[in-house]
Image 1: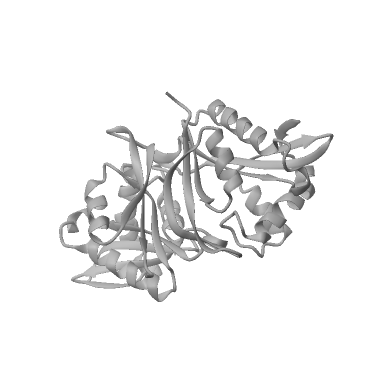
Image 2: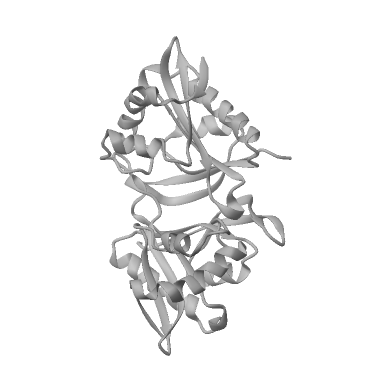
Length: 162
Length: 162
């Protein structure tokens, strides 16, 4: 697997991964009715540094890294990861997360924070915990899941310094 | 005291309140070097519904109300409040917060979340707690305070439904 910065030529395969996840509305607190241009505008917003994961010359995952806040909060990064449905179970999310930890350190960030990990996304929660993230907050019924209704979300955090 | 929606004519007094608070960099995780146009662009960003508090025909406070997230998170509001330094101790922040709770209910929000309450801002933390907010998460050293260095921030939350 290769992880590299995304290029404009990657927009179409990235849309193919990101758009269905947003439309499903089960894991990201983002509008579910975005058209392709809006999906690109969201995933490639100016603050986002976007990467893709390639396997056998096919893009099977993508993630972004950004400042979570500005000013006094600018030393904490934030990321979002997505894996192509047909490429699950191959360690792609894990590889992207490890890559992002390294990239965040390289850019001088002192921590990574996830603001809104939906509690029903148990696979993701377990994976982030395995990779060193802690649940530092629970947002009660902060996410309206299309199947499960109002469910908790977690704030997850990992320090990158001693 | 009157609390009413902000108008364009209020930009100058609002800048006079907001700009010094952002420049001080002690309480908001926002760039500290914003010029007046950028301050207005931030405080009046399209998603923000902005209000002002008036006392004796003078604007002594301002706050915004917005969606904290989109999609499945769009039922949770987020607010930011600022009081003019020369008007502190008059219950203006409290009045604005109570107003925002009512306004959020009126708009159908089911909760209000503060994402980043700097722990050294003890007056604000105590006031929000008194008004029904709970600390639901602690972000370790997530804020670089210009005097105190890296300090914790809190995620605070109040449900508006039973």
